[in-house]
Image 1 (spheres, one colour):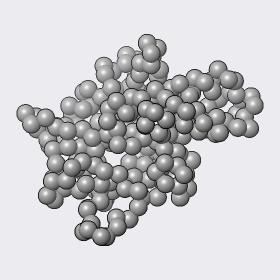
Image 2 (cartoon, helix red, strand yellow):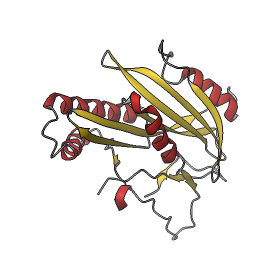
Image 3 (tube, helix red, strand yellow):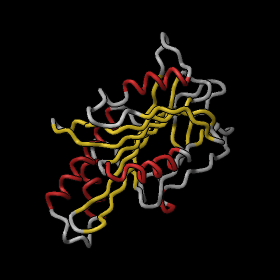
Image 4 (cartoon, helix red, strand yellow):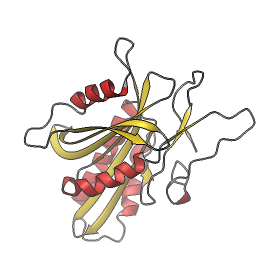
Length: 232
């Protein structure tokens, strides 16, 4: 299904579509069900990996739940994740969260200025010893100008810093003083370039959808492997 962007102003899209690779699944953000559904999903993914320690698996479940809680607290419109077990006790994981970012009335809404300000703030002070943030203005063929912020940060998780590679893509919402931000991250920093290729590909699928006239269905966005937005 398409996802709502915001209340519609005249000329502004009310929905968007975003596609993920087939190996990704949608994170349940509902506080009443997310903990159990995340555990079920990750334990299902880990079946047939007997060499994976229970401690590592439980740690992944906790961090994914933390991501879902943070996404819900930020008013996320959507979140998705992936996990893979390439061998031994090693794991690959990543998440992607879609949030709205309104621009305060007393601040300029120009993409270049918003991008500069967001690049300065990003996820807190730049961690020492890491490369500087990469801030870029790009042009997406079917969307137009977008902003891109790439970085490596120490993200606080219950008082423990977790080295994380992050990629934020900022999409101006036409007709609004708001941006749609696709924020993707992975703790597998050594594979930063490979994951960023995937994150860029995900962001590149975003499309704003105009509201159709009453009685006309809006085409649904296909979920991973033909599933719906709930992974069913």
